[in-house]
Structure formats: C-alpha cells, structure tokens
Length: 370
Image 1 (cartoon, helix red, strand yellow):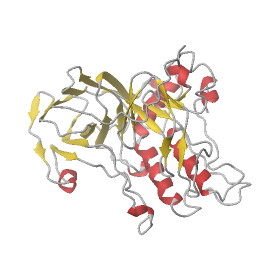
Image 2 (cartoon, one colour):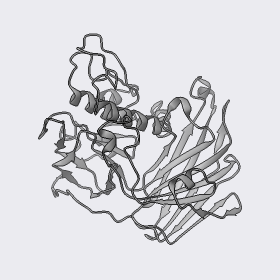
Image 3 (cartoon, helix red, strand yellow):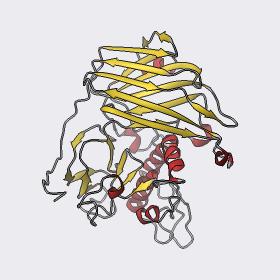
C-alpha cells in the first residue's frame, strides 16, 4: 500500500481477509480494521475457505466489522478531500517519511505504519505479539513523530518523538492516533443515506491549524472542468484556554450542490467550557444548552457536553459485544441551524477550553533522529 502511493498510484485496494485462507476471525477482523483507513475495500473470496463478507464469521467479528465500516463511511469527506489532492499530489496512504522525514523514518522501522492524509497515524495489528485466544493483543514499535498525538478511541495524550511499545489492542481496537490540531470533516454513517443538508467536523484544537475540505458531485468527471467546492476551516488556540473556530464561506459549485446546510461540531476536550458563543454571517446566534443527547439531536442552535461518548453504537442487537462499554474522552457538541454556506461564514468561540488527558505509555528513545 505504501509502495503503491510512492509509485504514483494512490487508488490501491486488496481482497478483504485475503483471496485465500479464511475461517480465522482474528485475521478477518484485523483486516477490516486497518483497511478502514484506505481508499477502497474489495470483497473477493475466489479461493478462500469461506465467503469474506464482514458478517461471515459471526460474532464478535460482525459487530466489530460493522463498526469500522460505519467509521469508513463517516470519514468519507476527509478521505475525499485527500483523494482530490492525490490526483496531482500526495497519496492518501503516506509513508511516514513523506510527512515526517528523518533518519528513523527513512529506514525500515516504520514500514508497518502509515499516515492517512495528514491527521491520522495508523499502526495495523499485522502479527500476533501477545495474543490471547480471543484475539486481544498488543502492538510494539509505533513511532510517533514530534508533537502531541491522541489515541482516537480513548483520547489519551502522547508526546511524540518516541516509540510506543506494549500498546493495548483488544480485538475491537486498531491503533489509530490523531494529531493535535486535527480538523476532520465527517458525515453520517451510511454512504447511501448521506444527509446533504448537514456538515460535520470533529476537532482537536491546538495552536493554529487549518483544513481545506473538497467536494464535487461524486459521480461524473465534471471536476476536471473545475466543478467542485472548497471550504476552509481554521482553528486558533494560541491562548490555551480560548479557541476560535472559523468555517469560511464555501467557494465553487457543482450540479447537485446543496447550499443550505446545518453545521455540527464535535470538539474534543476534557471539561465543560465556561462560555460558548456563535456567529453565522454577521448575526450572533443564541445557543441553548441541551439537557440530554436526545434533546440535542432534536434541537437547533444547541450545544451538549457529552461526558463519555459511546463508541459501541453498531453492535448486533442481543450480542455479547453489545454489552461492552466503550467510551472516549468528553466532547462538546454544537449544532447550528441551516444557512447558505456559500454566503455565510461561521465562527464559534470557546472560553475556558481544556483538553488535559493522561500522557501515558510513553517510551522515550532520545535518539530516533540520530
């Protein structure tokens, strides 16, 4: 996968769970996990011992694979933006040295991890290290570049410039890290049911960062004639306790472009902020605190402090996996009423912002770049 991108072919795929083999739930599940962070997933089982569908081997593989397939769908706007870049520039799947060139990444030490775009670092479980019978394992040798990184599934903070060993990876968990400052455009979790009247951004404020989201009709080659849109999102967090989030007006057009969209922000943090203000265009927006997730989901111009976001939302009903409690760091959810995004920018100001999570599992090397 890394080599294909380096060779100028970013649109790589391969057979899910391999075209041979089969009947190994752990291999099946681990394959569906890391290929979530790839351009495509190919279902083919020509010489396998069983069909390679995500539900072929029963529970808990079915529940876990469904979760990761939903996540792949949710990340489509992020992936699509980097797919546009890959037409003439950097590939989606990036060797570590493309983003972080140094003596360590230019060797073979990071050949089993990669960057997905600029914000996700993925370290697949590619071998059994200390696996038990259920497939729970650890991952060694994860190189984190300089800067701050967060475990995407827990929110735990890691200080980079190190190698992480003994990273706990139960069967459901792929080692995925997101860098501080990340801006992740998202959508709802079924590709065929995308709500074109809603845009979603997950944010990890830290210093200054920006992202340019790209979109087009997703079907034709009209993009070759300039038919597409871009939206620039900025985060300013130079004052550690104050965050300014700006979504600039969308520029461009294409057939089927929906201008009137609601906006949802998912801001990762560790405590409820002191104050949240919003402005759409030139008008201030009064935000109302929702008392429950249900009230938030059914409200407009609302915010909600989700103290423990539930990640286990797609398990098979009645399965043992459905009983698992899997949560991550708190998030501040903000939802704004629809507006013409080609005309109006959006600004959110957060006072009293904090994202203090444990800095754990750090194994300093001190000589990675030597």
